[in-house]
Image 1 (cartoon, one colour):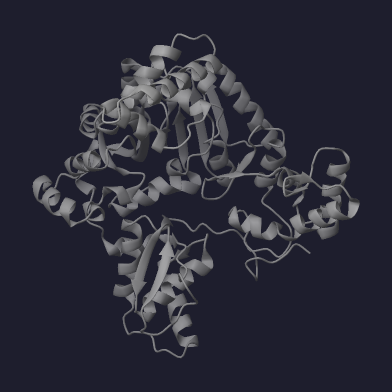
Image 2: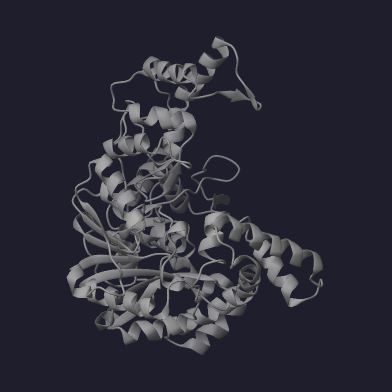
Length: 527
């Protein structure tokens, strides 16, 4: 991959905790994430490894990348953060002996496989097999057909005009010009017009993504069945997708599910290949394990395995507060509506929502349901487990819940204090073009100009007045500017009020960023 298009940021789907939970869900034992050894092939500047290492001090992370420039950049950030459990190395995966890498519980290769030559693709699968511990879990992302069949028309057109340009900026400019031209001249009912329409419907693509995808030297999609065949040839077995809800045929309606379940029998891979055609899928994030574990995989969800999991979900009542009676109510989450009249289910959704974005174990969820029903003067059912497990299964199958084998839960605090790693990272990214830090869910958290200044100060020693004073000092130094309705604030009183408002709403923002857990009110103020 070209250094100019290297990207380095956290990808939540690659988080070892996420991969371990999925493996558990489908019948496999998973390594302990807190002490895991993690390898990333094509780590760029370590943007996906560094957050994991910061949040898991007992784990060990190793990254390799072809670009010495990116490795040096990542090493500087690691040193600045004071992390001692992550190492980055410059290496060509096609040239090194996989045995020299050691053994790892999790091996991640994100945004590389489809964008390299055939021999490097083979080297990646070989290295994954060689580096993966017996009970390890691999992750690999790649472009897929049939969705990329239409996208290749757009890619070919862009390469025709922009591929020969010298600089990345010229490549992007000429490629976009080609698309604008074709939109004007393509017949309305042509294949080209449809391909262009689909491309535009994906939303605006930034320059880095355009260089990485449409203008990359290599971009070699494949079918899922092809990836399975290549994986088997390297002693690996397809386990699941990093987005498990896409694997269930029933989520696509009876018209799709009934014939496909009959046609595909017990072949999960064949079923998903059919589904790729149904949705014209373009991208996959697949989990791979050693082929010897194939007999252990179970694609029918076993509710007994929920005992080990910790769940998080945001499912508030749509129109009003939760009524713990047998009246019908609607609850919302991720664009879907759940309708129920069962008090136990209502109480469970209320408990999950109250804890969001942090997790509840299955037992904690049962205890919370009983407590809520008891407070409402309702006698809990003698056996709540079937109803609660049915809800959890529905949330898993429809992608409405997050789940881990270990709790995701920050220590509650009533003081203005953040984790040290988060504070250090916030200070380190102050001058970045698009500054962001990462939370316990391995998500990128963009920072505003003011929050870039505030977050490094949240060590528990600064009160409200100190935080406001820091913002005012930054405005006087010209580092920070407050605006209202697009116009800069001019008077000292206006600026002070804006700074105070920003500090007073900091708790809300930290909660939304999943960086802070308040002791009492969800939106308490920093005082």
